[in-house]
Amino acid sequence: MITVDEWRGALTPGQRVQADWLVATVREAIPRAGAAVKRGRLTFALAGDWEDWLCAIVATKTSVKLVFHKGTLLDDPAGLLRGTDPYLRHLTYVTATALPEATIAMLRSAVEYCTDLRP
Picture 1 (cartoon, rainbow, N blue to C red):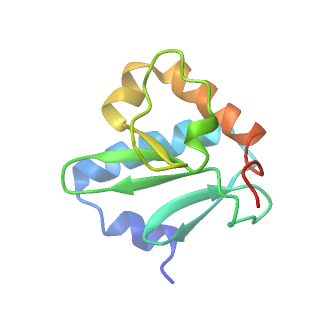
Picture 2: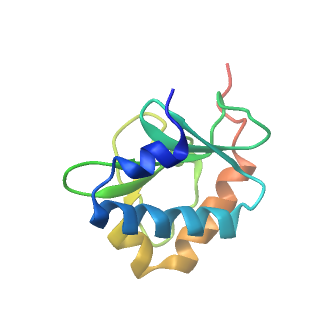
């Protein structure tokens, strides 16, 4: 298992700037969220509940994204979220920085739904 610092160190300088902005936004919206690298992505959860994680930051060759675990449940009046997975939705760094208040609202909303969809 790699550490958060090791995960950051593996990013390109451009990815690191974007990921750091997203991390700061998650910390602003959900200060009590813990962070760890899970499945190759920087993942945030409450009280170490990694099964019901809130969101994660994923860096690909083409973008850095904020992924919401229960994204299909979130209110998204601005239509920012993308994805076709039954549960996950994401938004890119570019979208998040264009509408930071909407991004923070979705992050706070994710806390409300973190245990929904359990069998």
